[in-house]
Amino acid sequence: MKISRRDLSILTIYSSLYAAMVYAFAPISFAALQFRVAGVLRPAVAKKPILALGYAIGVAVGNLVSPFIGFYELVFMPVMSLLAGILGYAASKLLGGGYYMAGAVIAVIIPISLSWMLNQLFNLPILATLPPLLLSEQIINLIGSSIFKAIERFYRWW
Image 1 (cartoon, rainbow, N blue to C red):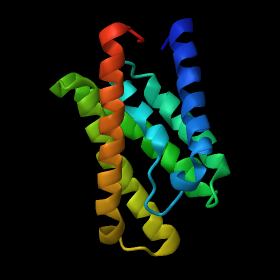
Image 2 (cartoon, rainbow, N blue to C red; image 1 turned 60 degrees about the vertical axis):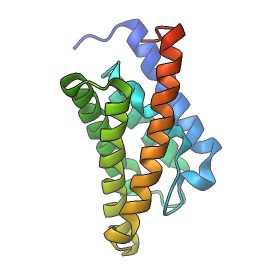
Image 3 (cartoon, rainbow, N blue to C red; image 1 turned 180 degrees about the vertical axis):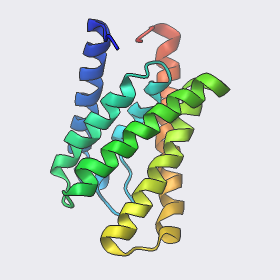
Image 4 (cartoon, helix red, strand yellow; image 1 turned 90 degrees about the vertical axis):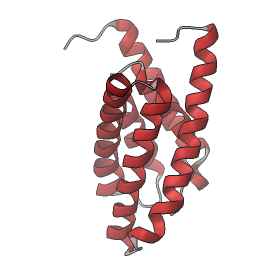
């Protein structure tokens, strides 16, 4: 697969911005019931599938400052983020819906992954952590989708 310079530039900016936003909002990015502001960037995968990789890289780099650093933060969640990004892109292309569809798919996969991870690390019940994580992820992805939709009205960024 050949990656254009433009796509490589977008990938680099995207992953760097995601990691920087995780770091800037670190206290709420790593809480048990996290609200990761950087998630507003996730719906962008609807237009550029390469951004699924950028999302995974951003998660891995952002998680370097996690108070829970380890296998789950540096391997499991980046892999799940890559998977969520790929599936979000595929759903937006197959089912339509663009940013909103990609964001909705990602906002289901990530909370399930996080709930499972929290269960493994801290023995927190999945049924207790999943509902608030689903809610916060849907909110942040809805905000991100709306932002990208508004930007798209004036500028073709992809």
